[in-house]
Figure 1 (cartoon, helix red, strand yellow):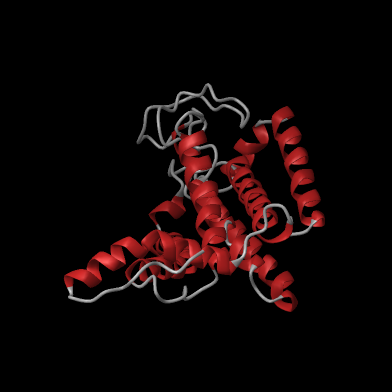
Figure 2: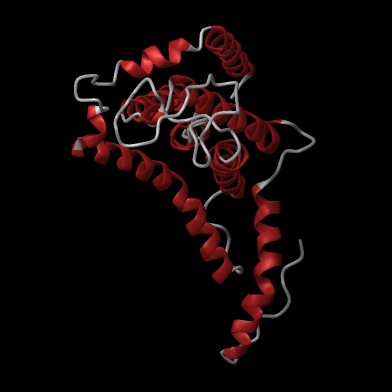
Length: 262
């Protein structure tokens, strides 16, 4: 999560944005690589193994963030005990996932950016949907009403793995970033092969996920004015959950005392 990575991400955003803005038909040409004109379908979306791989990609993503939720749940029950994992890591992992694949993708864009998915545009007549007009990535005025194409939520969730990669030991971190990139690209290509997204939907997902992870890492770990400490987070959660813990102890006939001071 250094400046070199930020420079690469912003450069890719500029290059892809301008190129596919000037030549939006490139999105159609790339999507056509996965379309069978004779059968009028995206064949891979009917493949059971490919569908399993798509689900497995999301299972992997959730497997990487579930320990953070478990640690908080245990802390709620037992605020007298320290967190089972780094408090900074909990905030970093949960907030970046929520922002990249939840709030920014599904709430801020997909619900208001009317870009139709490849499977429903006129150029790929699968015979299953009413045909809609293709629009470039920058145009929110497409005919899609909800759950639209730009940008990919699953793609953002896959590229979110940059976050756990950033927490690996420094000697392993470059390899972890490569693995996260490969995981995001593979998941994105599968979404394209199913007719669910255009290339720019996937590219935007990857860039947004990286920028969110980069910014949150800087806020939590790097910049002195905003940098957090595990001890402070643990103490704050103890203070927040102590009243409920104290009440439960009273029901059991025990006295928990006052919460430890921050």
